[in-house]
Image (cartoon, rainbow, N blue to C red; front, side):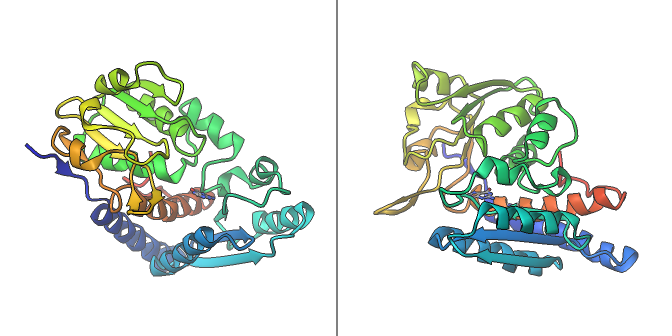
Length: 292
Ligand code: GUN
C-alpha cells in the first residue's frame, strides 16, 4: 500500500486562485486593493529569494506590493520608524518583516511594533495570545497552510491524536494551538522527548517540524496516519524533509512530500492573511475557507 500524496503545489494554486477571485471582487465592488508591505533588512540570499517570490505572488493575486529593502546596518530606530509609517498607511493592510533580522536588531521588539491587525505573520504577542485563547487572530502562515491541507483531506479532525514534533514559535506552538482548536488530542514533542518513536507511533496526525533531514523513520509512523512534513533542509542531495519519505510513504495513509508539500502553501496563506486583514479593517465579510 502506498499513501495518498498531499499535493501542496496544487492546493496552494487553488488557495491563490480563491484569493485572487476575492481580491478582484473587493476592487470591483468596493474600490479597495489589499496591500502587503514586506521589509527585508540585509542581504541574506535565502531571504532575498523569499521576498522576491512574495512580491511576485502578491502582484499576481491582484494586490498591491510594497517592498522595503534596507541596508544590513539599518538602526533599530530607523526600522521602527518605517514600521510606524506602514502601520499608519491606509494602503497597507499587511506588514511582514522578513526573519531572521541582523543580530543588532531586537526581533521581538520589532515584531511587536507592528499593529496586530496588520501582522500577517501572526507573530505579534497579541495574535499569539488571541490564538491561544481561541479568539479571532492572525494565524501564522505555515501552520495555517498545514491545517487547510488536513481539513481538506479529513474533514473533521475531532478526537484524533495529533503529535507535533518541534516547539518553535513559528510552526510547532501555533500548529498545536490550531489542532487543539480542531478538538484533536495534542502532544508537542521535541529534541528532549523520551521514546520519541513511540510518541510518534501514537499519532493519527503527525506534524514534523524539527529541521533535521529524514529524522522521522517509517517505523515511527502508525499505519494509515496522516503525515505533514514541514521540514525544508538543504542537503548535498538537495532539499530534504524531516521525514524519511521513501519509508514513510509505504506506511502512512497520506503524506505531504518535500518539495511540493507545505512549502508552496506558506506564501499562499500569506496572501490569504493579507486579504483577511483587509476585509477585517474595512468591516467586510471574511473570505470563506481561507481563515480559521
Ligand atoms: N523567515 C522564514 N520563515 C518566515 C516567515 O514565515 N515569516 C517571516 N517574516 N520570516 C520568515
